[in-house]
Image (cartoon, rainbow, N blue to C red; front, side):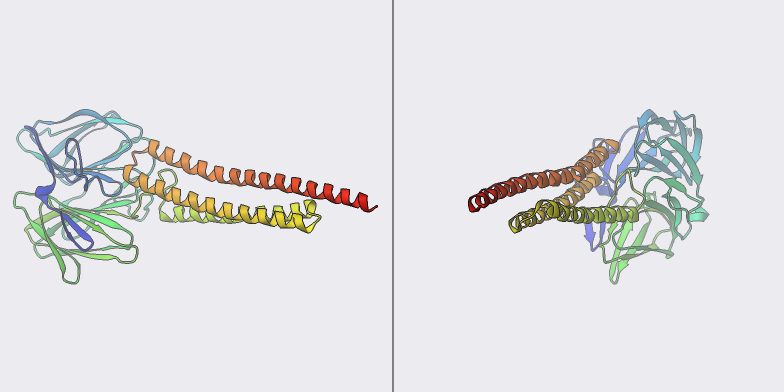
Length: 396
């Protein structure tokens, strides 16, 4: 792995590799028996395998679930059959997409007699669990990709992209075929990241990728570039073809952190949720204070009692704020864990059950604290009143 600023380069030869009599595969991320601690996915993007399948061979019927799976056909044919009843022969330029959801089975094979099939197989974790399985294909001709970025995959929530396959994730995928000295540009906004995977071909074409003044990287077929930004600094990419025809895909993740699988509709919804939660937790202490004032009017006929009640309210207020901050920090920790180890419904369910428990337990804890302090207050008041009554009797 090589690094330059916000761009990391994984050289083609450094990828994982597995070769069989019928299949030659290169792995961008850990896959099957190949494992690399630095390459276990890139946000929701979990698999990019560059496969070359021998004629008449392929993957037998096998199962998938909780994944968005698509194949980008570079050359040759891919014969597809699945448990949903779909049968199709996908050819060069086709993108074949399966939302595995609750579970599907499919087989993929090269039905040609003498030629290899070359494809990129890509897996993405969806932002929702228990989806109904679905299937789609769409063709993108070389002319659609020639010296420009062609959108081939986009979020199901993105209504502006009408000619692309829709995915259940805040992610966009482009494809391009650059001729010699032609360029495309792409702006990676702050807080976002993207991946560029260059297709490996026989003539091993290359591109020059500029990502800032004096910052250039030469990349060849099979190389992978990881581009990340900070919350304040964007990256402007200029990709220039240095070979006869350089084909690549650019996968753009719109948000730096994967957000809750159940409420994810983008960053804005999560912001709204946190604003509502913050308002609620600011309102609850105010409600407690107001109730305390009412209780003081009822139960505090003497100054000493008011002082006890005031101390109780201060403690309740501090407890509310402290427990809320603790819940927020724990939720952030759980979200971070979910980003790296999210395997769908089970992890997200555990995360949300934990967060919900933490949201419920602090108010109950606060209520119990108030009851305890009220009990102390009542006993203190009664004791004071008894002593006052006894003193008055003596005086009489």
